[in-house]
Image 1: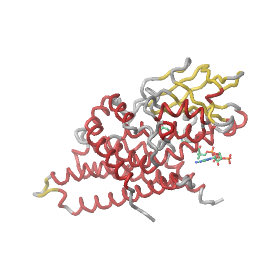
Image 2: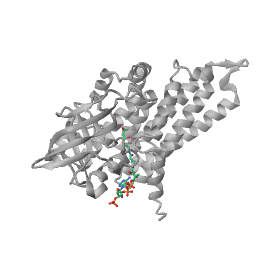
Image 3: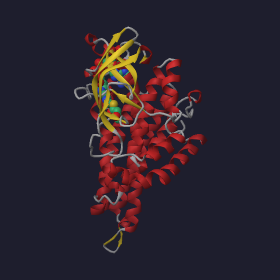
Length: 380
Ligand code: CAA
């Protein structure tokens, strides 16, 4: 068993870390306040290949593995969780689905432009009445000759405000439940697509998150990914991979909060000495770092299993369940160690505390993660 990163992964981590420190971190506060990502930052990340890390060079991707992708997610999210989720939804949910289930022609048409830095993808599963109950999707795709006509509405679509394509899930055979759902690539400039303003949120405020309505949107049969009826399986598979990305995001948020707190406790003096000299501070940070390291190992295990084409479903769910809990605990405790200053917008732990919460919710709540993990334990 090898707990070390290989040479390529170490180099990749250095690249992500340097970029995050120099390019992302200085913008994080203003992007949170503006509730918008800096478009130049997105362009820089595309140019450096951050939007195509685990995809083949034959499609314009970086040809790296899922550990490298997790490292990117951790390092970028350490500086700014909103930038992290932007990469994650594009990579795991949109590109992951097209890469795994698309035909060669579909990959050339819908994967290549998204991994070579030209376009951005998003994911259309969640609806007002279909959150944890993903099978409750009501959006419909009616076959008419050689095309489908799509009607419905999707909520909480990350990246939807600026993405070019969505991987959309719609019922092609409503009587069949999960077996009647199909997946489609829908260009977001298509006629009948209506994109709302950003939904105002507690954290990851710079990320784009919108409602998208589809009214009589026509897509050719070519845009259906997988067979009719395979949509639910495709959605679940995308989310299995996505959970590794979100778990890595949670590790990044927590590590970022610890790093900021260490700087602070060395400078802040109370009762005549730096608060880093108090055993309470030292023990709290020791406990936090132990939990973050444990979460990181769970992320790396799931990513390594995915690299090896093993069954990583439960491992990804465990990693997300644990890492998101750690991120919420750690950011709360970092705010507490920093006292009143930790609660002020002047210091980034305040933002990290708000950003951490969503990792327990999106791409499957912690309760859904328990369904997935216990489902893998063959209790019934
Ligand atoms: N991986 C692969 N297949 C899976 C699966 C998984 N994780 N979970 C279920 N399936 C398969 C089952 O094996 C079953 O297949 P068969 O019919 O062939 O046996 C089929 O799917 C139906 O399974 P269930 O009967 O268990 O389905 P269910 O309706 O009871 O729901 C659930 C199961 C686990 C709760 C599922 O609905 C779920 O994962 N919900 C959470 C949805 C989610 O994560 N949403 C996130 C939205 S996207 C987002 O957040 C993006 C963003 O912007 C950041």
